[in-house]
Length: 125
Image (tube, rainbow, N blue to C red; front, side, top):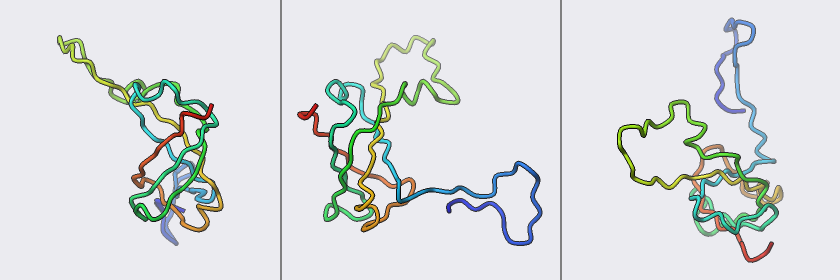
């Protein structure tokens, strides 16, 4: 359970968000890679990850589960306004979902929002 909004005895309206449930045993990582880094990335490729929480002593293993259908800028609430003559090319980042090994998550639990280093083995297709 994360981000609890209500306390015991508090009155709430129907439809109000009370809390967020986060299934940590089925966690995944959304790694934001630059678009120029994704030419050889395919679903099913193995990935290795390290979390800043544990440092390099703990390594997680996972597989590429999917690639997003658009960049973060494409789905932003307030898109960038580039009609002012700003012709600088901005490299976009695309989220790549990495499914993690549940056994490793049980041994070393993660929390939502942590920073991680992700390496995808693009040699295996």
